[in-house]
Image (cartoon, rainbow, N blue to C red; front, side, top):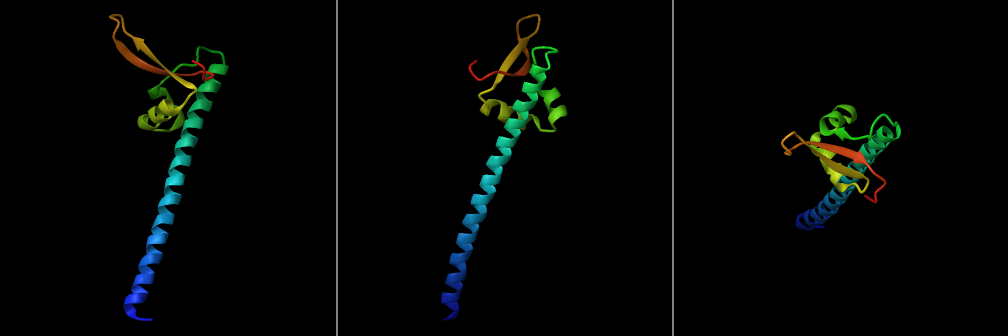
Length: 107
């Protein structure tokens, strides 16, 4: 086997290995996103079932309780069929707060 053919075989194996690493990394990314979405849904569901209020929570509250970034919480909320976004308004009718609330998915 010549040097150039050995190099070609090594390049082919490197390409295969790279593709496998990318597939595994993407799968891990998708699992992590799904885990965060479920964590947000579970937390909001428990808050609603506690019965203290309607279970609506602000993004800042969720950041503190769940240890996720605002972007991660918003991503999870917008991908969820069970989380409803409620916009609160000030005395002049302008939107000033965004609340997230667990629903059964039909709302």
